[in-house]
Image 1 (tube, helix red, strand yellow):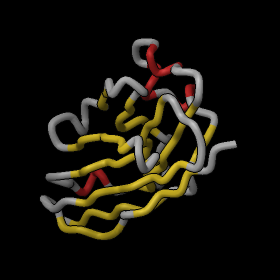
Image 2 (tube, one colour):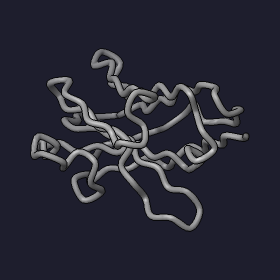
Image 3 (cartoon, rainbow, N blue to C red):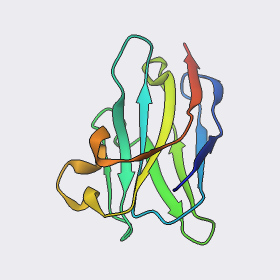
Image 4 (cartoon, one colour):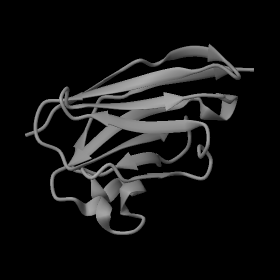
Length: 125
């Protein structure tokens, strides 16, 4: 059983930056960040495989960077040039079998079986 604990959310003005962290308690292969705004479905933001390969949603490409410190078993999401539409609860997700190697699977909710409790990001205009 893997436990995921997110941190780093907060409130920021448009154009600002935040870095989210997700501490994992056990082995993970693929990890990802998802977000859910009020009244909307949860959507994939970025994912990273054990080999360091990454993918991003079109809406965040060039602004967000996903990374992982394997020594600390910690996932990060560096968010720059934040926009009000980035406001959402951000969730960390993980799985053990490498399913994100399938094209497009890394940003699908069904790929992951472990989820964190979420951290709120609010961007004001």
